Amino acid sequence: MTHDGRHDALELETMLLSRYLLPGRRPPKRVRHLERSAYTLLRRLQSQGPMTIAELSEALYLDVSTLNRQTAAMLRCGDLERVPDPDGGVARKFRPTPAGEEHLRHDLGANVDGLRRVVGDWPEEDLDDLVRLLRRFNGDIERLHGRPWPRG
Image (tube, rainbow, N blue to C red; front, side, top):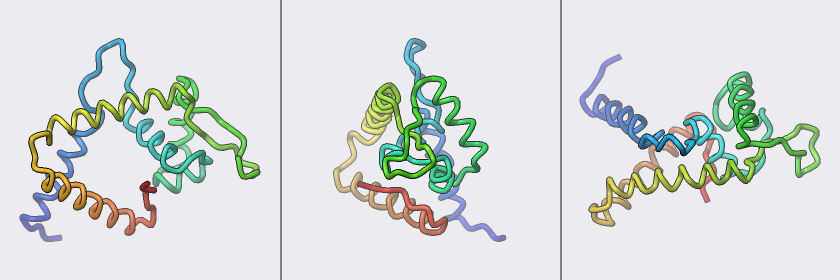
């Protein structure tokens, strides 16, 4: 496989972006922040509503055993609960608890505030361009994997 400067630069910048964005600033000791996997899982449930372990596996492109460990930890700490399928299906679904929703709200707010500090002095057009290009980039990845992320 040959490398070229543009793709090497893209790899570096996406690696750095993933490093910088989550989990964000180190929280004060008294505040519990969500693990990256819990944050992503709660954001998906927020976007799509209650989901079974199989639906989460398909949506997040993770194996069931990994999700069983993640959801078990989130059940223990009170961020998730199991509920009957609202559509009458047999499998139980996961949904955030009020505490999980509050943790997500807090971490989401902290992430948005952190991003605002970084791009606060950018012209609106530049920020709009960045969002448009990231949405296109992520959308192309989602299309390649056949796993779109629901966007409101």
